[in-house]
Image (tube, rainbow, N blue to C red):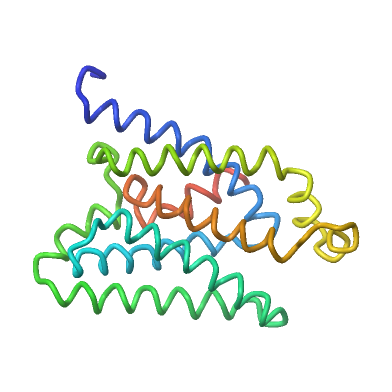
Length: 203
């Protein structure tokens, strides 16, 4: 079975996603940001649609838009601390609406979007596999090097700030990593199942 190149890509993609997604899911649950992955998957879908309309690489455009979406969510979360559900509602609806509008611009685009909605592990391209490998390597290095500041930030942000942790920079970097992970995993897992993959195994 592994003699076929597409099965080799599927094996590596599934293995790498299986390593990085659980690590990310632990911190998302502890920080009560479980909907962030779902939000960014919709934003990444809009990025894929934008890339297809502009004749760019959909994987790279979805990646870039997801990272930008992560930064916007974190900025909104810090601006509206009392109403923490606002960023989720704003980003999810905006991303989904933008994806639908962009899909309507090209008639043949909606057919190829089923693979992004439900994922297709056997259809992983070389570009997507490289992207997943880079994200997995960056994510592992991130969690290893910054595990202590992340623990402090996750359980008590105010105490972490007093103890010298640059909470703002760390929170924004975590949002960027979340966007990168979501965008990399979306073609394999799919928009509809991505948040479940990240959240459910942690219960």
